[in-house]
Length: 440
Image (cartoon, rainbow, N blue to C red; front, side, top):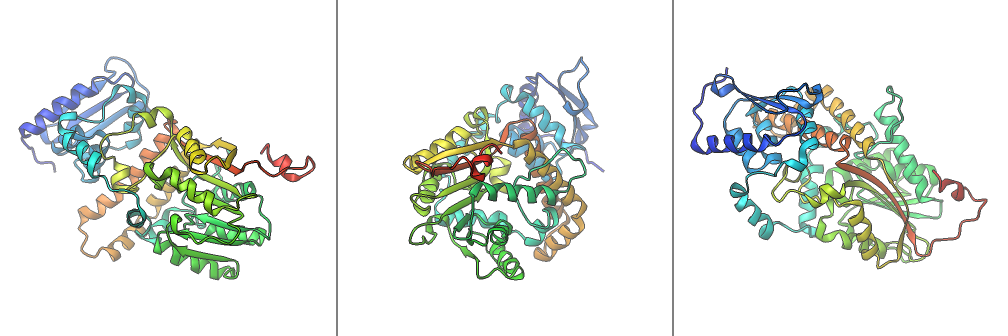
């Protein structure tokens, strides 16, 4: 039962500002039903025309504090209101569909109410130095191996899968295809020493050692990931080939002639804007100076999204990936060039962003299907958690899956595979398999 509440002056002001701002919507319709106020209804957007169902969202406002949150920061405010059950929405994806269709007409929130946060971000935002990077990684990846196992595929790959159009294809099959594709790009052989920066739970390392009999070193900042990765390596009887180090990429030990190959999947997003050049400078220092090959795979913003990024905290930045930064493909390749001092040349680049959207839907389905297991694990690790805490945790993950899926589907987010070699690259005979694979 929703108890009627009289909004405060600030909540009334915020409501007026939000409705005025959302009146700019050019595509779609949002209906707010104020449960705290006898179901008073507010409609914004296209009122007199039929709109597609996917652009017709209904939001039930349970607590008028929602208006204040939303006014202060559209992205963060909406997420927190949803997590704290101040609003209800049967289909969050419709909200994001409307947002991405109208982003050019919307602001990030009321600049007056944001003044303090904007100044704080400008002068007090923590850096992504070695110590802070460890804390940022731990905040997400040390949450619980059981949690990730419940929504990822059995191989525990936490990055974009490579799908076919077969609707019956499993997430595991799509992830196996991804790993196989990226390893082929490295052109590995048994004499190589491969470094994986951000090795996760170890699947790529294990597959590389099994298929190519090469030596592999992986680094991670997550103690939970290292523990499970080492167990999986032991179970595969690959301790003689594969090792895992708990260290920052900047502190990675270097073999005498460098690593023959480096792969880094879903990692550059965690580096931070200030450190992106240093990331590639470090890779260049670690890589064999004449024959090294690099493969990276990760998420980027489109140029337009990159230029108009939020001046205040976002949901992803505060709750999912603290310290994260999404470059555009242009700023990413520029950092690769500057960081390596021109010694790395891009030889391949492909955008597969929509494949990440489908991956996120698969993770969401797994999360919902295995919620009882996830909830039991959460309660075990947080015995004092209240029912509200548990529901907030559930909603946080669902919000993450849904908002990111919409970002990829709307093409606001991309996912790039990039290969680079030392300049000049090695000669490739016209009869070599690598010659043919250049077209793959």
